Length: 312
Image (tube, rainbow, N blue to C red; front, top):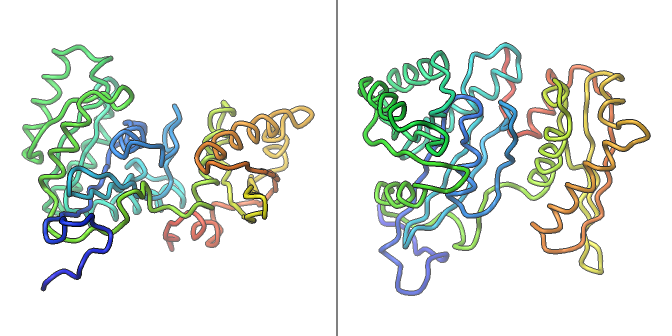
């Protein structure tokens, strides 16, 4: 079937364009979101030092010549214990299943054998091949890197191996060029200057959730979620955003607010500053903390996060 005329392609590029999907999968905290931001060239996914930060599939869009690559950043794949865990893992496998190419990202410094083996076996059972990406080469001895690459390539799963530093960007350009060559011919799915396929309301909620993750140093981040309830474009060009932070218990609400409201005030300030930089306009951000017991078993919350609600 012939492709329709691609209105998003530059003049003279019609018939020469390529476009495809690349899933980035791996164990929690392997650096997938950091890599996505480097590949795209701008921040489209939140990044923290905590595991299981990404909860849903996030699409980042990169251009390499006349090729558009749509990257799907997925939650880390691990053994699920809760309903939310199961939904996150299902989202990760769903992202891999639809992709033209798959990156399996491994933290070369702190690889988790159990999680890696589960992912490798899962890909094998689907009959899929993957590109091995070893991350954090700047913090890992070369001898360890080579041994790890050799051991993982013995599985027969990988077509290629790349060694990168997602944080510093080392090796990322070579990886992007290689992926571009693998994409099928066809029209672009998005305008050339679009960096992500994430609603602004969702992206704003993710920015606030990132600041909460970085500010709170216990288990509370995993017991909260953030939703954008109001988004108003004002006549002066500024944007009024109202968000609700849902926690599961009254004691968690007190932690999120902080003494005298200092924690939520600081979170709001940091989130507003980043949103103003992203949106290139003044932002009025209002944060509210509400207790919603067992929100992680609430079907509506999953819909807001872009996750399917597991029935079991």
